Image (cartoon, rainbow, N blue to C red; front, side, top):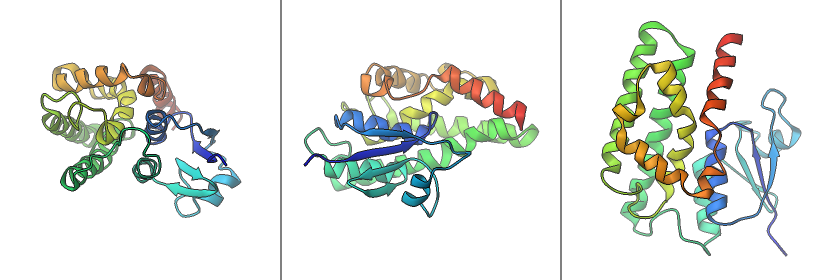
Length: 216
């Protein structure tokens, strides 16, 4: 009997897009259920009653929540393709550290660019650029964060590419000037169909965010 795989996601979500990329990397067929977060479905509330958030990954009726936990689950269950996490325990720990760093630094500081003003916004911009540059130093001269192969940290970070244009416009800075190696890394990632077919258009994301700012 074939596995039943369902992904509950919304149309623009960097966290859901992480899961889409992981599924594409593992060549897993799945059913996508688009969620309207303003009118949450009974399925979402049933499968994620604690946080009531997307993405939710449902495998043979069993839900798994939180994007990076979902990716670890996918990596452990579907072993027929190259692993996303390295086999060495120390390298696995380092990969989890950097994925956690991305979640704690990039999205929160980036979001402050369109939810705050004045000094608070300037501080968020400074913190965001510093965090991006920290990631750039970790990347170094490697093709991907794990080395020569696209892996766990790349999956965690590349969906945030759809925010880069918004960061530049609202923060009044250039990603290419501040983080040239990250931009080269992003270009390499986007050459992979598993990535380019899974993430949103940065210009569309900017339009959505601008609409949110106008209507707030």
